[in-house]
Amino acid sequence: MEKKTDDVWGALRAFIANRFNLHIDKANETEVVDSISRNSIFVGGPLWTLIFAIIIASVGLNVNSTAVIIGAMLISPLMGPIMGIGLGIGTNDFELVKKGGRNLLIATFISIITSTIYFYITPLHEAQSELLARTTPSIWDVFIAFTGGLAGIIAATRRDKSNVIPGVAIATALMPPLCTAGYGLAMGNWPFFFGALYLFFINSLFICISTYLIVRFLKFDKKHFEDPGVEKKVSRYILISVLLTVIPSIYLAYGIVQKSIFENNAQTFIREQFNFKTTQVINRNLRYAKGEKEIDLLLIGDELPQTTVNSIKGSLKKYKLEGTTLRIRQGLNARQEIDFSQIKASIMEDVFKKENQSGSALKADKLAQPLPDIRPELIALFPEIKSYSLSNTVVSRLDTQSRDTLTLFSAEVSKMPNASNQVKIRSWLKSRLKVDSLKAIYSSN
Image 1: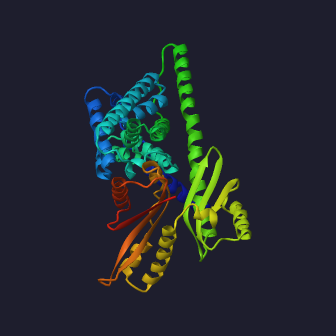
Image 2: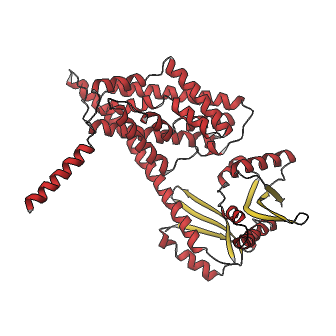
Image 3: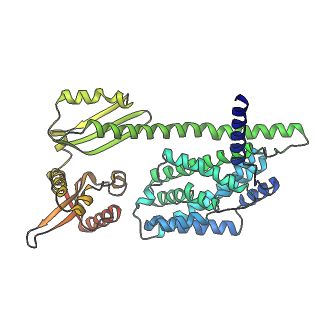
C-alpha cells in the first residue's frame, strides 16, 4: 500500500515538473542574449519608431482614445533596454547593464521631449480621464508590471516567438506615463510630471526585477573575466546597482500596498457604518500621506448624535483603521459646504429610485448605475469648484406627460464660471460620465 502511494506521488511530481518546466522549448542562450542586447539599443529605426509611438500615444491621451493608446504601446520598443538591464544583472554583464541603462535614459528623455512638444502645440489642453489615470501608481500597477515582466522574459527565452511581448507592452503601459510627464511639463503641472515619472519608474523597475529572477532561474551563464580583480570589481558594481534599485523599490511598493489597503478598508467602513435611512454620505475624501490617514465625510439628512459619532469612531479599529482621523461634517458644518440644490438632488435620487422599483425597469436600471468618483479630475481641471454632488434623476414633463432620466451635477464654486467655461465643464462631464442628458447647477457664496 505504501509503495503504491509513493508511486502515485512520484508520478504526480513528475507530471507537474514536466508541465511547468521552463527549460522545455528554451532557445539557445547565446541567441537570447544577442536578441535582447540588440533590442536594448536606440539608434536609427528603433529611435524613430519610439518617437512616432510617443506621438501616437500623446494623441490618444489627448483625445481620450483607448484604441489609439493601445496601438502606440504595440509599436513601442521601450521593453528592450529594461529587459537588457535585468539580463545584464542576472549574467554579471556590467557592460550590458550600462548599455541598457544609458539607452533607457536616452529613450526616456526623447519621449518626454517629444510629448512635451506635442502637448505644447496642440489646441486641446484639457486633461482627459485616460491621461489622469497615469498620474499615480497603485498596487495593481506594481503587480501588473511584475507579472508582465515575468511573461515577457519567458517569451523572449523561447525558441518559438509568440504574441506575448506585444501583450506585455500593452499590459505594463510604459508609454502613457511618459506622455503624461510630457503633458505635465508642457502645462507646468509638476504633480502630473513627477507622478507620471514615478509610475514609469515603478513599471520599469519591476519588469527589470522579474527579468533578473527568470534569468537566474534558468541558470544563464554568468560572464567571467580573465583578471579576478576585474571580475570582483564588476560584481561589486552590479551589487551596488541592485541595492540602489531594489531597496527603494521595496519601500515604494510597501507604501503603495499600505495605501491600497487603507482605501479598501475605509470604503468598507463607510459602507457599513454609515448605512442610515435618514442620513446620507454625499461626499467622501480619503487621504493617506506620510503616515497621516484621514477620512473626511460630508453628510446630509438627520444630524447624527454625538453618541453615534463616538460609537462609529470606536469601530475604526475593527476595520484596521487605527490612527485614522475621522472627520464628519454635518448640520451647520455641512451647510457651509453644500447648497440646497445638492440636498434636492440627493432627495430626488432616493425618491425616484423607490418610485422606479415599481415603474419602468429601464429607468430604474439607469438610476441605479453607480456614478464614478470624479473628484481628483475636478480638482485638476476645474480648481474653482469647491464641492459638488452628482446624481441620476427622473424628470417628468408636464406638457407631454413623458418622463426622462437626467444626470444632475450641482457645484459650489469660488467664482461663478462664465458661459464659455460652463459649456466646457458640461461637455467634459457628458464625455466623462458617458451620458446624453446632463444639467449643471452652480452656486457661489
